[in-house]
Amino acid sequence: MKISKISVIALVLTALAVGAVYYKHKRLGLPLQPAQQSEVWTVEAKLQFRANGGPVKVQFYIPRSPPGFIKLNEDFISSNYGLATEADGLNRQALWAVRRAKGKQVLYYRMEFVQSSDSTGPRTTPRPAYPPVPEYEEPLGSAVMALLDEVRSHSADVATFTRELLLRLNTSQPDQNISLINKSGHGSAEWVRQLVRILAGARIPARIVYVLPLQDLVKHGSLVPWIEVHNDFQWIAFNPVTGAQGFSDDVLVWRTGDDPLVTVSGGTPAEVDFSISRHALSQVSIAEQWARQTDSRLMDFSLFALPVQTQNVYRIILMVPLGALVIVLLRNLVGLATFGTFMPVLIALAFRETSLLWGVIMFTMLVILGLALRLYLEKLKLLLVPRLAAVLTIVILLIALFSIVSVQLELERGLSVALFPVVILAMTIERMSIVWEENGSQEALKLGTGSLIAAVLGYLVMTHPGLSHVVFVFPETLLIVLAITLLVGRYTGYRLLELWRFRGLIKEADKP
Image (cartoon, rainbow, N blue to C red; front, side, top):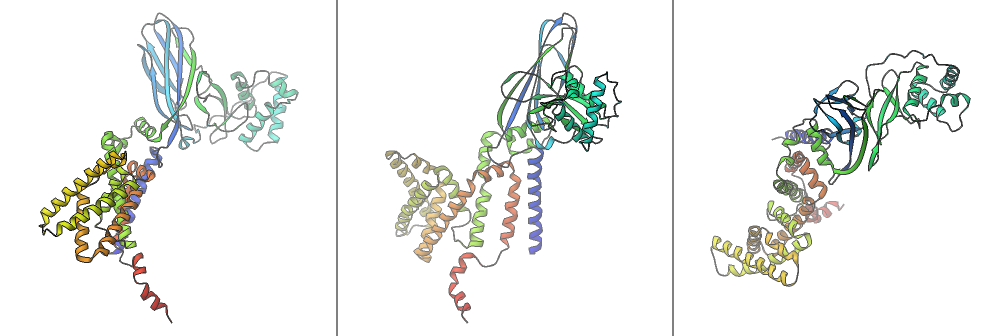
């Protein structure tokens, strides 16, 4: 196969992996870092009223698509009430109904949501008509017109006009015109309605938006009126008290318009209390809830759909290709000699149970003792299969002895040596003894040392928390590992250690 074809295959594999990771990260919000958490807000609205004893119908505005937030879950708690939801292009309502109810009634609406930078787009709706200029009563009309003229001369567009107007109305040193206008309390719904009428004097479409300030551990919260103005393209929100433009991160848009928040038919007017709490939740759990909310089946075909015990197995298995890639790079690019390709990877997996330092110590001691006994068995002239069985028996006895000594010395790490791949240890001892006999002790020690170095580097890669998280959450990243392996597989140039091997020839070539 030509190198160009290998490059194309590697490029396609990398593109597929990067595309899948990007989609799962942006679409579902799966995190790229381990233990990444986000703040999840829980808001509960409690509706209380008294029913008259006949049919009861309740209409309650609930958030539709609040900008800056993603709704994870919502619950409606109501005994014996039928429930339906209706939505238009602007708002959403919960509709409760029951054939007969009497006495105190309590209804609950609860939702969980998380902040998201991807949902802060402009609130675009059909362009509203320009409002007619209201007929203000005097002397209010003269004060409003004078104020609008002053603001118009210090602004350039709708946004700057509104900001300048709010700053003037909220000044700490008002003049006579502003004092005449500011008869109602700042921040009240009546004051915001008056702002809408004032902006209508400049032919600027405006409307009230009710937001819920987000503060942790709030038990009796209430909605706060804000104002939105239209600039011929989109609605722009303003805090009517501070004049700040845009919805801040600490407010949740609940509804748009000035209709009553809740309407009760067949009972007394309802009282609404908002309770707010905040807690941290892993980004993976948030992604799973968001997938269920959007009816996405992608999470159903991910590793998170497996039982937890099986997930733990795959967290280890999926790291094996990374360990194999380390061995490929060490052998083909560095030139490090090892006993095969997968033996160092399996040894590295064993180090996960013993920790790196103890694993290296126990591996070295067991190989040295086993190799000494294996060389003694060579003098007995045993056949291959009985000799391997004898080496395996010796390794198991050494492991048992090592565990007993560890218990007596109160070294808990020594108990983990039983989890070593016994067959791999036996084969390592057997291969080292064969190389020792055929090529000498120097070659055997070189291969054994190279295998240990490769196992240590493989362990560091396979136990890296960031890599383990990315590979498990985005297993398609193994396509990138495959692409790198294919590219390295065509490399036939010099290895790094060969520069040291041929250093004499290099010196001769540099002489004049």
